[in-house]
Image (cartoon, rainbow, N blue to C red; front, top):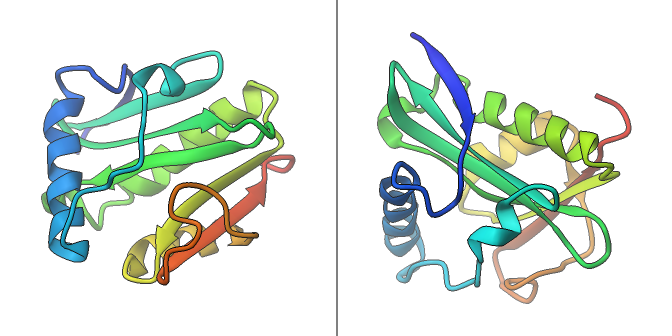
Length: 154
C-alpha cells in the first residue's frame, strides 16, 4: 500500500468524485446533501489547506481546513471512500491538516460532525478533540456535535 498526500484545490478534478461520494453519503444518512456553503478559495493557502490522499495512485480520501473569522481553523470535508476505510488514512490526513494549520499560526482546530458519524467521533476523540460550544452552519442541528482541540502540542 502506497499512500501519498497532495495539496490540491477543492475544485480539482481529482476532488470532484470524492465530493460527489461524500454528498451521496450525506444524502443516504440525512436525506439530503450538505448545504453548507464552501468556497474553494477558503481551503487554499494561506488561510486554509486541502489535500487529497492517493492510495496506489488512486484518489481515495480528502480533507481540508479554513480559517474562521475568530482565527480558529475549521476542519472541512474529511472523507475516505468506503473501499479504503480501516487503513488509517483519515488519521494521516488529519495529522497533516493539523500540522499545516499549526504552521499557519492557528492555535485551535474545530469541526462539526454528527452523532451518526460514530467512526469519525472515535477518531477525533482519540486525537484529543473535546466538546466546544456549537458554531457554524449546523450549530442548531439536533445531532450536531461540535469538537475542538488546541494545536499547541503536536
